Length: 98
Image 1 (tube, helix red, strand yellow):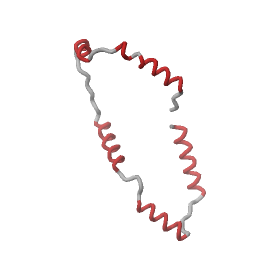
Image 2 (cartoon, helix red, strand yellow):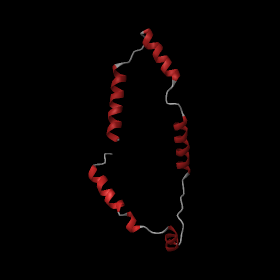
Image 3 (tube, rainbow, N blue to C red):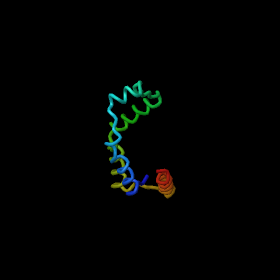
Image 4 (cartoon, rainbow, N blue to C red):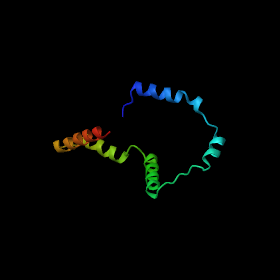
């Protein structure tokens, strides 16, 4: 998503007047009469744990890098036209989705 300068300026105008619309938290609690609650589903908890595991995993797979280096230096590394085309198409689809 691309955010334009105009959009940023509009947000600054809205939140720049924040001081005029401030409500004391104590007063807000009395007005609302109820505290906010947050409920996270089991699926979300699983996703959260998975994301934490991904963040903690190493970015570089040294075994794969070493294997590729050996194949390149020995001249046995080969990529087919189909593999290149598949990666190009997959990247184009991802770029359109993002």
